[in-house]
Image 1: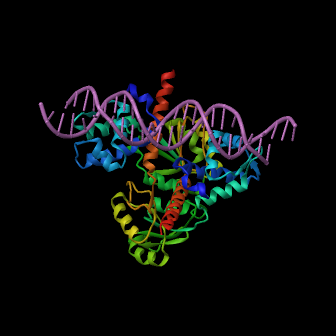
Image 2 (image 1 turned 180 degrees about the horizontal axis):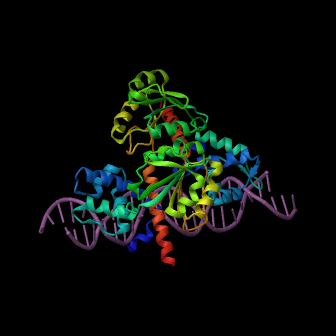
Image 3 (image 1 turned 120 degrees about the vertical axis):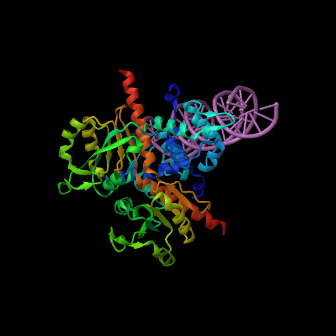
Length: 218
Length: 218
DNA sequence: TAGATTGTTAATCGATTAACAATC
DNA sequence: TAGATTGTTAATCGATTAACAATC
């Protein structure tokens, strides 16, 4: 575990992808895999795979490769898939309900325990397994259940205010889908801003660039 | 435009964020801004901003800064926000309908023109402005409307098959939300894999790391 | 002119790839 | 033992930051 402290941001971003591919291999019953085979599947270099996996200790064996089950388990442990962090979701509009229904929180270290919306007409409605609560209930709920993670699916204008309120209620991690760049100045609080719109724009840019390149070739 | 060809991937990924912040400033009526002021807002270095903006020609003026309106327009043009690429969405489940309703395609260079699902019980239902069509209609629709972009909100198992079918129908860009790493071996076709699950896992990892760091301090 | 701030070059830093000795 | 493949060091590449001369 000693090596853990120095895992670089680039490696961390690749970890979930390794975890997914190893999960697939495990499901298929593959017992061992070499960095070369994995590199073919994942379309990254074998060198990078070996470099990455070595950040957290030698899980491979020379002349053999990596044991799929062990490696999968180890990466899962590093990512914290067994943490079960209690998680609340704020904003039960289209996107909020889709996230609640679509994301498998439990296999990713989180447990969705509450959904809130400011719109009283939604109070009591079901979203997946859970009934939507009014945001007035947040304080009481958090005092009782002490959630650690909050998913924000709310309009830009309310994001900072709700985030501040949730920080006061002990939330330590924000998964933010609002169209607002959330940043919080406590170094024990982490924020992941998603910005689907930015992702689409990047695609537009690349589509345009590819189109121009193809046209130039004619 | 000559400098365009060499814009690095890291810069491209930051472009939508610049565009957003400049849009905000424009809305607030700010006329000019220095790299220093913008760096405070965006929490990146002024040096990086100047370096980035210089990839596509000198839009600043020494001793003055940048004209907000001009810079916003220029970045928009580079991203292709005015392209209006015809776009179809496949998979009108929770996530698909939320994306259709929640994302402002038109301000991001895309125009959503059709929604498809394989489930006949959804055919004819409204999703935003559009009525859901059956995937059997894809061929006919694409021949007529010639869409260029496809948003995939379908299960993992169907993704490769649908993608191949869409490539044959002339789709050049994929915005892929399925739990599957799509890669296509034509260099005039671009793919953006979103993977919300990976994003949540990264958050879990960081939450866990921050928690451990805080505990160690006690 | 003096002050401000860019554009741009040089220095630093970090991440990726290549290479190969260690070893299963 | 011979073959395979890792772990790890060194080389390369790219991205970020610092510095400052150019110039508005």
